[in-house]
Each structure stands twice: as C-alpha cells, then as structure tokens.
Length: 171
Length: 103
Picture (cartoon, rainbow over the protein chains, first blue to last red):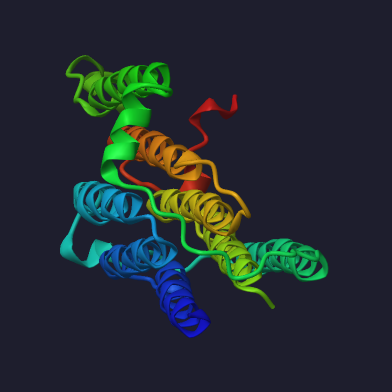
C-alpha cells in the first residue's frame, strides 16, 4: 500500500523538480503534465476517482494546453524557447527559502503524533457527489460558475489586442 | 511513519518544489506553473485528510478539492492572459523587466 504511494510520490516530485530546473519551456510544460498525472494517480490511490478524472481533464487536458499556447505566443523566434539563465543569487535564495519551508513542514509532520490506523478507504460515488453539489453545495456551485465565467471573460479582455495604443507603445 | 504522514510529506515536498520554482525562476510562465504546483499540493492535503480521517463525512474533502480545482483553472487562465498582455507591451516576459508600474 505504502510502496505504491512512495512510487507515485517519487515520480511526481521528480517530474516537478526537473521541470522547474529545465531551460526549455516546452520541456518544462511537458514534464509538468507528467507531474499532474502523478497527482491524479495519487487521487486514484486515495479512492477519490472523481477528483482524479477532474484533475486529468482540467490540468492534463486544459491547463497544459493553455500553458503551451502561452509559451508559443510569447516567443519571437524558434531559438527563443530556451530562457536565459537566472542569476545565481536569486536561485540560491530561492533554494534557501524553499528548503527552510520544507524543513519546517516535514519536521512538524514527523513530530506530530497522528493516531490514525489503516482505516478503510471511504467510498464516494458520483451519485453522492452530484446530490451534494445540487443540494448542500448548490450556492457554492453557482458562485464558482459565476467566478469561472467572469474570470474567463476577463482573461479574454486582458489578452485581446487593443489597436489604439500601438502608436504610444514605443517609449 | 504512517500513510497519512507519508501523504503530508509528499504534499509538503511538492509545495516546496513549487515554491522554489516560483522564487528562483524569472520567467513568468514558470512562476505561474510553480504556483499551480503549490495549489496541487494543497489539494493533496485535502484528499489525504479526507482519506485518513477516522469517520469521514461523506465527500467533504472531495467537494473542497473540486471547487479548488475550478478556482485554480480560473487563476491559470487569468494569469496566462496577463502574461500575454505583458508580452505585448514589452516584448519580453522576464519578471525583472516588468517594472512599468514602479513609478
């Protein structure tokens, strides 16, 4: 049971870590797809199948495509896909901050006694999720729908080309 | 180490990978991807606590993660639209050079 979890965790973390250090943005995005698939595998392992397939649909399917399009739209030439190396000081301070946070979190987790045995996997069916979404969480569902609509309309407005300020674009 | 602790260590490690990516890289798209990794780590925590709680309320953690994924998708769309807008203005997506609002 735990061996499967460790394998999933290692694959996910390895893909994410390599993606964060690569210079080529396309390779980073493709490795992050593998990382998100690993997270979906974790959800499957934990018994949350609906969330796993939602993760695959939203992240592996949609967000990755948006990221790839953003990468391709924000380059000037074929050679522009590799980013210039960052400054060493920035990388070192980032590693120090991340390592400190990781140390604090892992230390707190290991030091905390969690008296949870091997409880049986809770089962939740799609019917239960649908009933809860339409019943208890109906207001939240409406709010999330409005939020998604407004956010996507706002994204279109922000990203759409405005023809008026072409003349004042040169500083 | 129990399985719950393994899940929590996994999610904190994923969070820190995202944090290092968001802090150490200067490419805006990579910073956004780091933030997405951190959101995924939070979702893993929700599912882990739902899975290993002694008497799990029906589908509470699952509900939370579904709404969280929806909000994260909206955030990714708006963030990448901002990246495209910044690129259109200064032909570059390095964070250090996006200082037009600095005054």
